[in-house]
Structures are given as structure tokens and as C-alpha cells.
Length: 407
Image (cartoon, rainbow, N blue to C red; front, side, top):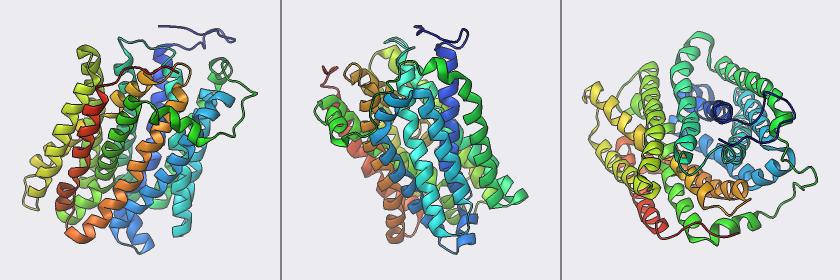
């Protein structure tokens, strides 16, 4: 563990504290993004639109995430990683409140703001985590931090539907925003000491193509980023449509479907820790990503066999497996980006890579919504969508040819 100079004794940058705070920020940003999907049937009724339209709301989130990822490295350099985390939470809370407004335009704008916040979480957290990790623990630590994404989904899946029944869908979204603001205030005490490496003279105006070249000029970064494009499309697709699929195709109640979404996300938590540990243990992150991809493709194909008479236990098992893999890959991916990034450019490389990742997220739910109109069932739609992570397998294999680039 490495400590950085500290202006405030007792608040220096240490591994357990950094992991805890970055995980919480990631979890609440993720909860803000997933909560509308967890209560999608109620939102659809309130706005008078089909349930499949939630896919387009999620796409709006990741348009915002792509936008802020482009500037994430510049924000970290100018204001510091901790302040960047606070900005992420501010956007997420504002977006959650707008999503509670009974106008589709407000929902779209709210989704965009949530996405702006979500896109700032990874450049800031990667910047801090690289200071306190090494080659022996990096994959595991990044994976633990990335459990914040499915943990946010667990909160959304378990708390969202019951809260809708108790206080209504609008107040559910408001309460989610309040939780985000509380964390924003609490982490402020660390800002002075943790952001000492910020450069107040650095400009916010940045050439997005300059940072993008960091990824596209280096084969390993490029291949890993393109693989993440396909993985993220599947991950957010299944997280977005789990509740709607179970209610529509398998006659689950909203609360029962929310429980399955929670199982998916809990399995994602376990998967991220498992795969991170395995990548450090074997020294082969790309080999771990290959295994993850194969199981994800197989699981998506098998979904075509799910129907209303399928035993609930089998449905829970299926979504648990998909959670382990389709939701569990991110920590290994981010650790690989941080490892491959040129020295001093981790935030910029992570932000640019996340633009590619969020492009997959933006395309995925909308593509699934479109496929559903053709297929007529969500189970067949996901079986067809298995071709997307299958393409990702090619890029993971390609990434194995490259080592760490020079700046």
C-alpha cells in the first residue's frame, strides 16, 4: 500500500478507505441508473407507453455517460478525483429528481443527467485506485470497487418495487436522489487531502480526439475497449429488461421480478470479486475474460427455452449464472485498461475507453427494444442478441497479443 502526502492527518489516501468510498459512489450512481428499470412497468403505465420503451430511457442515460467520459480525465486533472466523484453524485441526484416529473421530456433529460454522473465515476475512481494498488492486487481491488454497479442494482431491485407500492413511483425516485445527496455531503471531508495532486491551471476544454488516440493507437487498449462495447451492451440489456421480461413473458409479479433482478445483481457482485481474484491468481486477465464471454453467450442462447411453465428455481439459476458473467466482467476490464494505459494517462485512457463501453450500453437496450418488436418475446430476443458478446470474444483474443504501451 502506498500513501500520498496528506495535509490533514488521518485522512490520507489508504486502500480500504479509497475502495469503500469509490464503491459507494459507484453503487449510488448505478442505483440511480437502474432504479427506473426496476420499476419500469409502473413508469410505463404512468406515461402511457409500452414497457419496452425503457430501453430508450436507458440509452439516454448512456448518451450522457459517453459525453462526460470524454471530459472525465480533464475534470480529474483540474478539480481532483474526489471532487469529480461529488460532481458525479450531484448529476445523479438531479437526474433522479427530473425522472420523477410526469413529462417524457423531463424523463429524457433526467436520464441524460444521471448518465453525466455515471460517466464521471470510472475516471475518478481509477485515478485514486491506481495510487494504492500494485500488480498483485489490482484486478481484485478494481473488481471489488466495481461491485458497486450490481450492488446499486440490488438496492434498486429490492427496494424499488416495494417502495412503489408503499409511496408511489415518484416518491421512490425522490428518495433515491436523497440518498445520493447524503453521500455527496459525507465524502466532502476527504476532498482537501485526497485532491492534492489536482492541477488548478489545467483547462477543462479538451480535444476528445486527443484522448481517444490514447486508446485507438495502441492495439491492446483498442481491442479491450471494443470487447467492452459488446459486453456492456449485453450487461445493461439484461439489467434493463429483466423485470419487464419476467412480468411480460413469464407472468411474474413486479415484486417477484424485482427479486430476480436482485439475484442477477448479487451474482454480479460475486462474479466481480471471483473474476478479479482469479485474474490476479492466474496472471491471465484475458483468459478470464474469454471464459466469462463463453458462458455469457451460452446463457443468452439458453434463454429461448424459458417460458411461463419453467420452474422458478431454474429461472433464478439462469439469471444467477448470467449475473456472474454478463454483469461480472467489469473489474477485470478496468484493471486491464489501467495496466495498459501509458504512465500518467490512466484517467484519460479510462475515460476514452469508457466512451466506447458506454456506446455499447447506449446501443444495446435500444437494439433489444427493436429486436423485441420483431421477435415478439424477450427470451427469443436475448437468444438472438447472443451474437453481440460472441463478437466480443474475438476482440478479447486479439487483446492477448499486446503488452503495456509507452506514452
